[in-house]
Amino acid sequence: MIKKAYQKKILIKRKIYLLVFTFFFLFTQIIGYHCSRFGSSKLLDIKTYLFVLLVPIFYILFKILFNLSYKDKNSFQNISGKKMFFLSFFLIFLAWVPIIISFYPNNFAFDASTQVRMVIYDSISTYHPVIHTIFLGGLLKLSSLLFGNYTIGNFLYGLIQALLMDFIFSYFISFLTKEKAPKWLMIFSMLIFMFLPTHSVLAISTTKDVIFSGIILLLVIQFYYLVTNKYYFESKKNVIFVIFLLFFALIFRNNMVYALILFFIPCIILLKNNWKKIIILFFIPLLLYGAYHFSLTKVLHIEKGPKVEAFSVIIQQLARVYNMEKLTKEESSMISKLYKNDSLKRYNPQISDPVKSEFDSHVFFSDSIHYAQLYVKLGLKYPITYLDSFLMNNYGYFYFFDKLPIEGTKTYIWTNCMSGDKDFSCKNNCNDNFLYHLYDNLLEKATYQKVPILHILMNIGFHVFMMFFTIALLIYRKTYQLCLPLSLLLSLFITNLLGPVALMRYVYPIFVCFPFMLFIIHKTWSNKREKI
Image 1: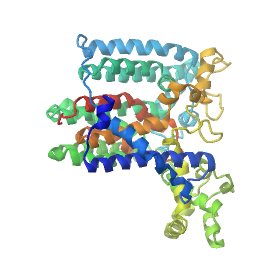
Image 2 (image 1 turned 45 degrees about the vertical axis):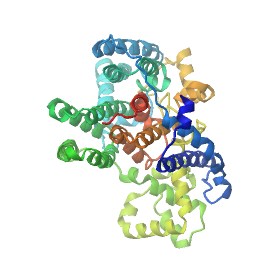
Image 3 (image 1 turned 135 degrees about the horizontal axis):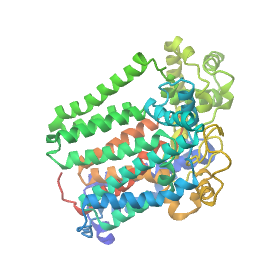
Image 4 (image 1 turned 135 degrees about the vertical axis):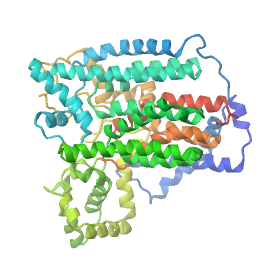
């Protein structure tokens, strides 16, 4: 099979396509290595481009992978999707029970402390998704009023979220059953959801990214149905369900608005015969979101979140230029006015938070024209510095060998409260048990990197490139419409590149959809002549 895949003759345009993909893969790895080791991409160093010597080897590898075709009829034929759903739901939850117990009441991490305080002190803002803030903070506040502690509310949040994610993962397994997926893929997917620490610990973690990622998996499945079932739009239930999912995706992540706008482009191209229905499908959720946001800010008078989050890239680029280049006194003075409390000295090339948190947006917007001119001027003068800033912030998404944790910057998954604040988390060392310490070592201290199989299955760069590989394979095999569900993941990923730091939880939707990618790859290899 491998020999045939290698010997298969391909058109010159496909050879060029494979060369471009191979170059992109190797280029990102060498840039990631330089950013990780030297703090710079070294784009102007001739040694950087010696990786072209490896292009022939990796070209052959990708040629084989892209040309593989096989039939696998070993699927579950005698079990219904409904039975598979309940079996999966039971097994996944059973596997998560030890995690739920060992992390009792839950994994109170990330922005949880800030969000709960917003509810308790009645200072909610749109900086964090309001629906998640009220869900999390409301449960803890209610727990405090009824039981005199936050522990029960914490536990209920973790339990409800775990059950919800279990439902979504089981729905996916049921989807595989209905699609007659191979037996190995169904078993592998179930084992991944049951035992991979990424899923089991995040299932009870207090971050909006978890529920949001589950919603994205459901959307990916629905858009797969949309391109494979020509009668999809004839069902009002299908259309209402997608609108419902898109709306909740919008209110659970602030960047989903931009991702949805990007996602509209491939939708309108690949589904041009249904362009009117696509416009309606996107317009209604955006309209509902607009009404929702208006009611929050204008009717309920919830404070708008700061605007600096959207300027993370610009804030980081200006800070890098200030610290790395020789600027004129006027340029230095203008930049320093933007950053309060001498925060420019705390510039960290891999995370914008130290400077972003002290960025004075009022100064910037009060003289926005001059600052825009300064930004463009410095960009033209120091383009490599700007590019280095962007790459240093994001190489962790691509580089297979990124070493975590990086002190003060990022780890894999936090397994305790980010700020060390114990006000709302478990008291009296209730997490002092073997299983908790095992997962703390695997995730917080990132020792999974020393475990061969886990290092692959939990690697950020691997999952990101699986997304790129799957899309590239579909384009190569001219199965364009199947690219649509993955285009949603790609759109989300692009918006993440404009974020403050490269964190695993930001690309968790890609992790959640990894088994779906394997399903699509198998479908493409198994049905090379299939026309959607």
